[in-house]
Amino acid sequence: MALALTGCLGPAGSARLASADASGDGTLRIGLILDNTGRQNFLNAPQLAAAKLAIKEINAAGGHKGKPVELLPETISTDTAAQAKALVAAKADVVIGPTDSSRAPAAIDVLANAKVAVISPANAAGALSNYKSGGYYFRTAAADIAQASVLAKLAKDGGARTLAVVHEEGGYGKDVAAAVVGAAKQSGMEVLADPEFTPGQAQQAAAAAKAVNPDAVVLVSRDGAQGAIAELNNAGLAGKKLVLSDGAVSRYGTGLGARALDGARGILPGVFPSAAFQADLVAVDPGLKDMVFAAETYDAVILAAVAAAAAEDDAGTSIAASLVTVSGGAAQAAQQASQPASKTCTSYKDCVDALRAGQRPDYDGQSGRINFNSHGDITEANYMVYTYGEDNLATMTGTEAASSSGG
Image (cartoon, rainbow, N blue to C red; front, side, top):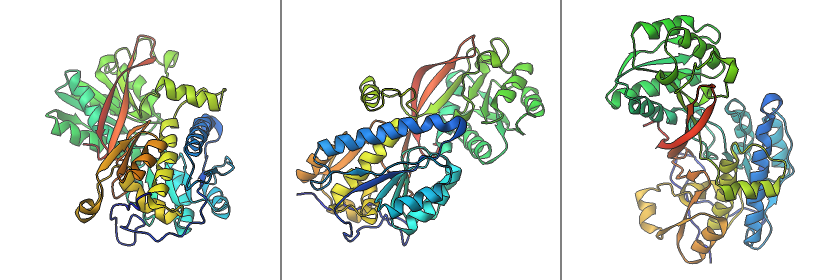
């Protein structure tokens, strides 16, 4: 018999409350919001393949209460509110997505109002940690600022004692740069300058960085990254002196001057998929070429099903109330005292077996440890470290982990 596990106490009125009354109809339905079009449309296929793989494994292990878990038919559109309304009409209990942080609020508003749990595998905007979702919103991707301590560490590991943080205007640039400045100071480095630039107009910021003669430069950028790197190169701040934020990492090649990035380091969020996981995904979609957000999507689906199993109910409210606990997140002291011992599990079957054995499942997945906090954020972020060669192309050279708070 499964144990009715409950989630961490969140803000007042939050679905992440200590208990939820069973209200499901007996069939667990999982929906996807795929919102990537144009140049970003390659992001849809790995998420869809990962969701299908997870559903296949869940159903092979008995499904939810003996009934197959359903993956609702997917559509692709940037209108996330319309997708959310369609999924509510299709009786979704939990929805995975969207990808783009800027399109998340529209979906969250619709789904939370309908008491449907939402788990994004890709949202990274820091502001979403405090978005008023009523406790229905979670994400298996780390917030942008989580990378700050890793960027500072890479600079320090490279021998830097002084640092300049050059950042692009906008929320991403300002938030991550501020977190990098704090992490650098905490690690004992001196931050000499923190100039801001507008995409396409980075010359003044590069000059400001050059004027303080730092040991290293952390570039926090997205749209204006290539132009900023070119200006830093012109200012003599290139190659090994550069550390690039996740938004600035790309395959630049001949798009930059010769050896502009030779020795530079940068990071991308997540973990590199294991060979076995890649093979399983390709078995689902033989034409799959990218694995971006596949691990995070797979984990989101598995977690949703484990939460439903723990709650013995498929309703969105029950899933939201159980997600923190089954992810390994910290419950309130009163709850911890009354809950059974935790058991780490890495698959739906293992987690359900733990429930049947009277244990509390702590799911660690393809993307690493999850451990949701009371905001629905993961508490540990994983990053892949890349080093650039003479051809301005990057190769993965290591991994780092950090607190989701950026520390």
